[in-house]
Amino acid sequence: MPETKMLEQYAELALRTGVNLQHNQKLMINSTIEGATFTRIVARKAYELGAKDVHINWTDDELTRLKFEYADQDVLAEVPEWKVKMYDTFAEEGSAVLSIRATDPDLLKGIDPAKIAAANKAGAQAMSNFRNYTMNDRIQWSIVAIPIDAWAQKIFPDEPAEQAKEKLWEQIFSIVRVDQDNPVEAWQEHNDILAQAREFLNRRQYHTLVYKALGTDLKVQLPKNHIWKGGSTTTEKQNIPFNANMPTEEVFTVPHKYGVDGVVSSTKPLNYGGNLIENFTLTFKDGKVVDYQAEKGQDTLQHLLDTDDGARRLGELALVPHHSPISQSGLIFYNTLYDENASCHLALGKAYPNSLQGGSDMDEADLDQNGVNHSLTHVDFMVGSGQLDIDGVLADGSPEPLMRKGNWAIEFE
Ligand code: ZN
Ligand code: ZN
Image 1 (cartoon, protein in one colour):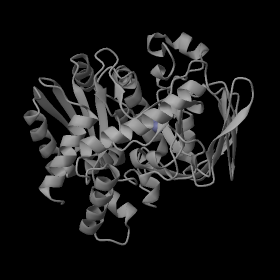
Image 2 (cartoon, rainbow, N blue to C red; image 1 turned 60 degrees about the horizontal axis):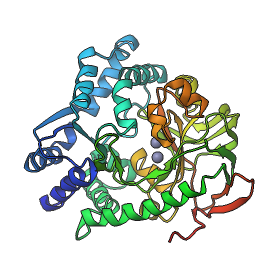
Image 3 (cartoon, protein in one colour; image 1 turned 90 degrees about the vertical axis):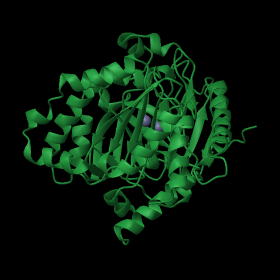
């Protein structure tokens, strides 16, 4: 384990810059048994910062795996009402929600993909009300990650567990800026840079983005009045700033659900529900995936695409410069929170309604008319690399270079 001081700094950063816990506010933490030491530090810090109550939902990879091995599919697809109610109640009460993620990328290797798909779908259905709170920024929420044996050893396969974890902690502290003199201030500076990129893109209001790289030739239309977001965001009603992901290096918006055409190739393995999908290609026509091919995990990809109609359409488009600290680490993290912030990415499934002006007040039919996708799922996959060029096409049809060789082609003021 790293020194307590570093863990405390990380905990404080997650609580102040991450969820931005307010005095007298309740905090719900999702965490893992393997991360109990860090979780206790976070809970103590939360009380010190004035939390009214701290509730922990513990998970355990080993028990999760056991259930998938032994329980029937219909049992796996059962989500107890009390569990749904618990999440909904915390959200209704205006609690902050912090997820401390740490999971084995190969946790469900060898498990029947149909079982996993059934469990994922049922979980997403049951959580759809709660998800509306997070996806519309109605509550402060944040996701951070910590090392566990299996995850660390997936990244550093030649190291014994302890050393692998030590190395991963170092990476996390550096990428999340915990090792800087004043991490909270460092995040303010970082958020300012993301705000400049986001404001530039909001002014440009590109009609279409054109992606070109080896194995990728894709046109993505953006809906009228789309909003680019990135870095810190604020809650819908109370305007409390928070950072939903730590790290975060992306600016993102909503692609038009009926306006995606061409082919896109993944550039990093995708960890979906405990299984890896690798080297895959998706072909789009009028926004819909009409063909797909994966070197590894074809079954898993198929189940993901078959979740519902919306799972075959895009719900997010995110730009991340190739020289971001995570890509500079040169590592593949097999973890979406880290890998997505190393690379330009797209997401299959549900779009963030507030990526469109007035979107959070629209019903499903209105959102659909405006090109904003709906689905039970939202899965990011990586398409960025040092080879990727992106042009922004303005409303009058004229293109301009937006990214070249994976980095911004524009100087932000
Ligand atoms: Zn993203
Ligand atoms: Zn996403």
